[in-house]
Figure 1 (tube, rainbow, N blue to C red):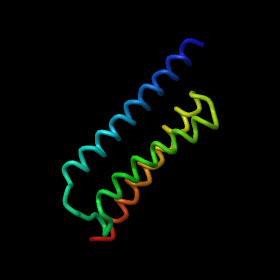
Figure 2 (figure 1 turned 90 degrees about the vertical axis):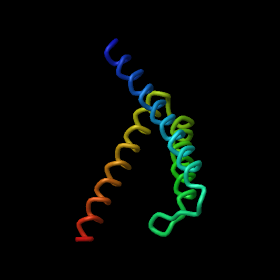
Figure 3 (figure 1 turned 45 degrees about the horizontal axis):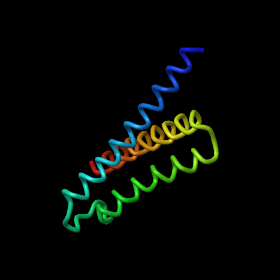
Figure 4 (figure 1 turned 90 degrees about the horizontal axis):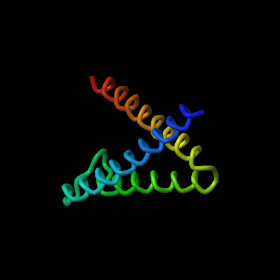
Length: 98
C-alpha cells in the first residue's frame, strides 16, 4: 500500500511541476514575443494563451468531477497523449516537406 501512495504523490508532484513549467513557458513566450509574430499563420500570443487555458480548464474539470488521484492520472495521460500527437504531427509534416 505504501508503494501506491508514493507513486500517487510522485504523479501529483510531476503534475504540479508540469503546470508550473507551462505557466513559466507561457509567461516567457508572451514576454519575449511582444511583436505580432505568427506560427503557421496563427499569432503566437493566441497559441500561448490557448495552451494555458486548456491545461487549467482540463485540470479543473477533472478535479471537479473526480478525485485528486484521478485528476493527476487523467491530466498526466492527456498531456502525454497531446505531446505524442504533437511529435507525430511534426514528424509527418517534416517528411512531407522533403
